[in-house]
Image 1 (spheres, rainbow, N blue to C red):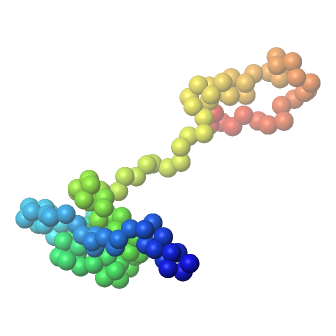
Image 2 (image 1 turned 90 degrees about the vertical axis):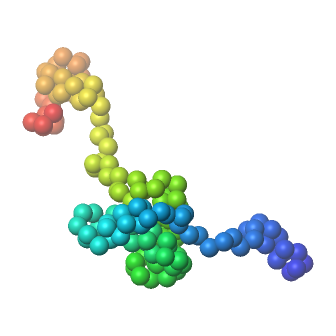
Length: 137
């Protein structure tokens, strides 16, 4: 039974694959990576990702890169996979600009219209509004 369980585990996980490495980079790409790492100005995220890719290109494994970059091996593997798939575009962070709006423009206009109207016009049993309309609406 134990041998069968072991065989099932090996079959499900598959054979141990090759060590993840960055794709072959040419001299221009190598110089660009070195320039990003040496420059030190700009985004720290870009600098760290470029450092991980450069170390992988020099033959360093994910575990060693993780120690140098003070991050996890999984994060290093993600950066390398992303670089292999998307190239230099994957090095630059894609900031989204904050939380998504809760209301659309049409909804905001409707809220503003209700907020500025008289309470009696809605047929509700209130004598006064309990909440004041904020000045930003």
